Image (cartoon, rainbow over all chains, first blue to last red):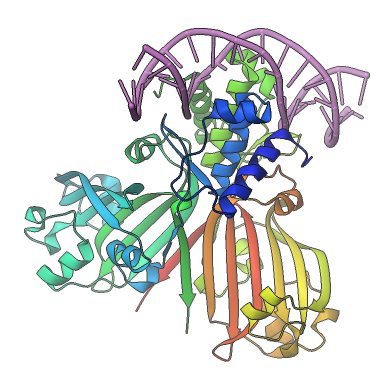
Amino acid sequence: MADTHYRHIQEHFSYLIRKNVLQAGGKLPSEREIGEQFNLTRVTVRQALQNLEAEGLIYRENRKGWFVTPPAVTYNPAAQLSFNLYVSEQGFAPSTEKIEQVVEPASLKIAQKMGIKKGSPVLFLHRRRFIDKRPVLIERMYINIAYLPGIEDEDLTQSLSQLLKNKYDLCYRDMDLSFKSTSLPEEAAKDLGIASGQPGLHVERVNYINGNQVLELDYEFWRHDAVNIAIEVRE
Amino acid sequence: MADTHYRHIQEHFSYLIRKNVLQAGGKLPSEREIGEQFNLTRVTVRQALQNLEAEGLIYRENRKGWFVTPPAVTYNPAAQLSFNLYVSEQGFAPSTEKIEQVVEPASLKIAQKMGIKKGSPVLFLHRRRFIDKRPVLIERMYINIAYLPGIEDEDLTQSLSQLLKNKYDLCYRDMDLSFKSTSLPEEAAKDLGIASGQPGLHVERVNYINGNQVLELDYEFWRHDAVNIAIEVRE
DNA sequence: CAGTGGTCTAGACCACCAC
DNA sequence: TGGTGGTCTAGACCACTGG
């Protein structure tokens, strides 16, 4: 069972990556070249590459090729650190790009989740975040602007938690988090520049202030290979 | 880009599953049958099925066929509930099977992680856990038996936390958790009865007692579609 | 423009499963 | 034993990337 052709390819590249012969961010040979090397068809080569992708060892950029996955960042949601902080603390370079920003009336679903009336104005913010120039995360956020007058005029590519702290003296600590391993929906995949159907990590976050008032609703789609989650439970 | 043949198949079954025409646990038609229905080859059909699998909507049993994924269980690591408890509380039927149990000297790696001397005796426990008779989780645990004399003679298919509480009056609360989305390694996949390379969730857990003494080291591999993680952070 | 990955065809053989 | 999924061949055309 383990003695398949695609497994040979997997082990070959797995070895090269472990031994750092192929370095993080480096490009693999083309599928056709690999096929010639191993005397196998592209179907078989792609099976191997897709398995390596599922392992998180390599990733693809749409129609550009296959690349060695850089180390994942560790995300500790309880640590109260912003994306910019924990990414840079781990030796990577974070950056953020705003895709869309609009104040809109809350849909029924969003209003219910936020505990506000349907149609109340919320700030919708759609951002793409990068680690070392690689897009790793798509964010869709809904923010209750009742708590944050004038926030729509600020630079919203910066860290929100920093902004809340500096401008509004607000600090959210309480939150509900939910994680689910799934594939990237078409839109998120497109935003990340990869084919849809790739594995991803879906994070849903609700930030509270004053006990149980929802300040922010956050939907995140991560590349599955870009992040580890770490949590310390202490009494 | 979105207008591919395999996407038609995906949407077809995605719809049937959402509308409950195909029910949880139900079997899909064979790949060849689907191919005839849509006038497509098996390669294309399998592309669609693999995408649905990545979404978590369907799963396969090795050489048996494709089935509709049952609802996922929600795992709240901070809630201090045993597997048996939180699974049954959510309306499912948990069960556990012991694959291997042995007292052995700790390897260097395990000893370091547990803060004990290399070669100290540890109880290695290898279990498979089921939800509604579907294998969802493989556990490999290393337990410091210095704290638990005679534990190797107990029934180790039961809940460990129950056993610790009843027999040793021990209760662990503090733990480190780490989650990583990856593919199932060959052995874990075999234990779960599925092809290796399938997506999975890797959980590493360290349970402490008396502040910083390691009672138990736990490596888990979950089917990625069988579990959600939920965490509440409260100050 | 040459080369890439993305999609797809029309077959094939095998190990394994249910009957 | 017939049908299943797992693996694989030897091609093809397309959209897009990079030079």
